[in-house]
Image 1 (cartoon, rainbow, N blue to C red):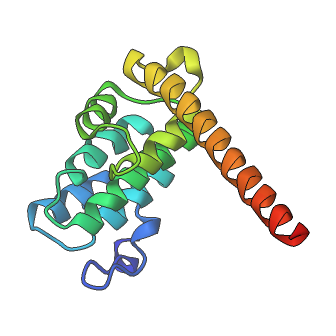
Image 2 (image 1 turned 180 degrees about the horizontal axis):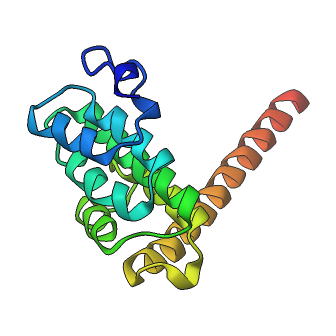
Length: 156
């Protein structure tokens, strides 16, 4: 299957299913490692994919690092779990609206049972729900005020 993997262009790397091939590409400094780690998340066990996802989260290319966080979200979706090393890497990046890990953490919160979440993610789930509710109330108030102003303008 290695013939289908083009490390130069990234072609076919979403189909990679050999952790040893990813390791060899990492050692030689190949491009598209973040793309390939998404393939590992799809095709390998969580235990096989996790250490490679964590390594890809440290890549110098921001886009490829972003793909590594996408791979973490994919792994959570498919396995309904996190490994301790993924947990540590995600915690180091941190949650929040501006974090590169934002979408991965959202996937984890959606697909990993609450009882299985580490304490920091349980806390973040509660905090993010409160923040979402406050934003909803703010927007609803702004829309109501805007509608009231428009109604008053039509009357005059």
